[in-house]
Image (tube, rainbow, N blue to C red; front, side, top):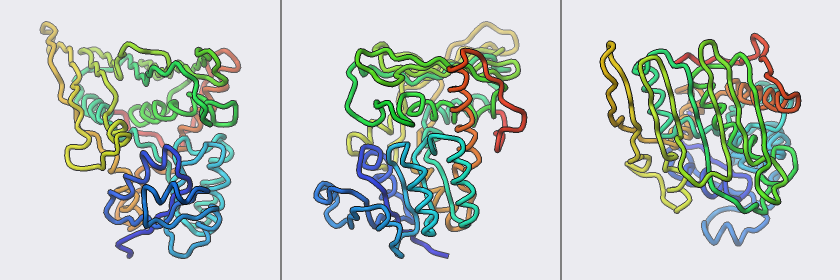
Length: 357
């Protein structure tokens, strides 16, 4: 069994530079060997000794590459991953997997046929706030949960010239932030019974959706997922309410900002100093308000899990079936928006149902 796996990354844009490359470089058991870019000088200005390939197919043909990571525009995920799998490579795709369910299912089949690992980078499973909320739910502190509000709000009033804001397949905020919130909800509660989605175009000059509200219906519980580019005042990242009380947490996990600042993952790197608040009543007593410590986040856990899976020591940290569930929710949400109604998910359409927290 190999101790070190060689990695090639397709593209040198924001996702590659900010998330994937720093995490790969910090993961024991990986060696970053090559990057695909049409601008070798730009890559080597940051990484002087790095091999740079002008074309993805050249990278896929290299015999010294074990794993290919694809953090490229969403509409390129399918053809690139298909070609990499055909070349015998293991593949990690950035979320949201692909732009259609049919493409996602085909990639799963290609990976199965090639007997290669295929996974999707749903890194927000290792956010500090999400890990903390999972613990609160598992402890039963809130009793039976009835309502959850989960938000990713930002204040970005200016429309930027980038592919995510262009009217092309996989563009818009639903495909950008929606997969994070949907995956987290699915991880905690499994697949909902139905979904209702509203998309908005709020900023002047915006060409794609930059605001959404999605409601997920579970038995005895409703989950509200929301993201917007025009929210300046901080809103709760999570607001969770149950029969014994509430948990509220402000502030996004700090790992993304630290990566943007060029910090390399290190001990205490995922610590979030903004703790949440529990307001609970135990055994019918008066409500008690107390600070609830936030568990450190750990994005490195994803790629450490990939190494363990390649060695045969553990399951894939984000299995394909779970990424397929997110694609089901993305497409069901779009159906809901187009039809202007709740869309019920068919029984059995979950590829792998998570256990309730």
